[in-house]
Image 1 (tube, rainbow, N blue to C red):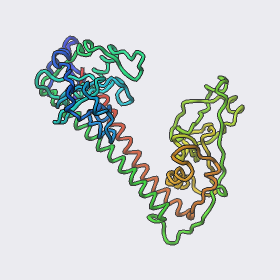
Image 2 (cartoon, rainbow, N blue to C red):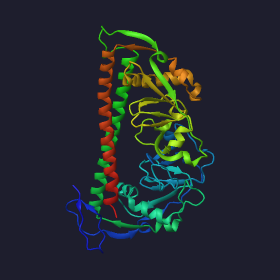
Image 3 (tube, one colour):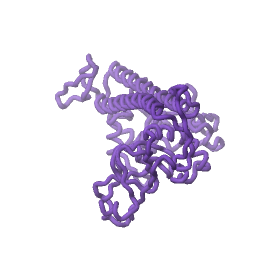
Image 4 (cartoon, one colour):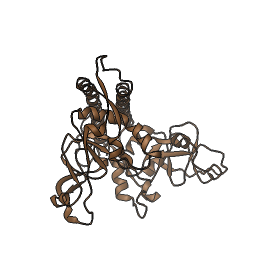
Length: 405
């Protein structure tokens, strides 16, 4: 269990410490610990090309892309890396806004693009500790203050001398090991929780297939079925978009729900009353059934969590007698079939007419309620697991700020 560290204001101590550790950390620099690796694959004898992924770290290119990307006849300028070497990728991403630094864990030598900066330890180190250090806010602060995005906003440019002048505060080897093993265990816990979420979602998909395609699992033999056209059983309407050139239509208090936001509780844009009245935008209520018609989210469906206006990329469906939740699950299960049938190669848009003309089998209201109750139970379990996953991730981010200087 970590505890608050004591400090006299001059000695270097992190905010959180493990019991038994209270001595100040030693001040040094990256250049005192590491040297730049500059050996090139001059004769081309190494063909194991490695890429530096923000999420997966250093990984063989053929595994990451499922094929070889680099020109094997033109790797003489690539840098050779060996086990426990570190590689800095200046390319930014959502997973690594300052570019990832990763350690190379494979026994087989590899080569990396000359766009990367490679370095190795001068003496024996705990590579796992340094890998965690380079994920911490200490590294982020330094690169933020010392780096320069310049004309390439997807990369952080930093001179080699500046990079290796990075100040580092080091604990004892024993504390390094404690920090590294603790964070590694936390990462394994996160991976296990992520796997649990994926398994629950897969289970839900399997249950939905059994319910809606095989008509099994929760339906008694006495269930009464009828085949319907959705257009005969529901009211449908889409919205529109106010003129983007008229600023008086935007910035009001009416949430403007777009297709990528049907699952959310907030929107990026808001309309004024004038924007609503002078356009084809239509109001929907919390609890309405929405389906996305356009773009990458085509076919996605959900129950609206807010009152707001919709544009032409969203179709609102209000059933007369059918359960909205039941219809939502049915359309969710049918998404791939709808996309494959009506959007060739995933291109194009759905339409209200396509959804209206869908013919589906609907059970009686008692069976609908049973389906909704069972699938809602699974969804609650998924939501709880996702929430726990996010909490552990937040804990990890906090620890990376407080366990390092």
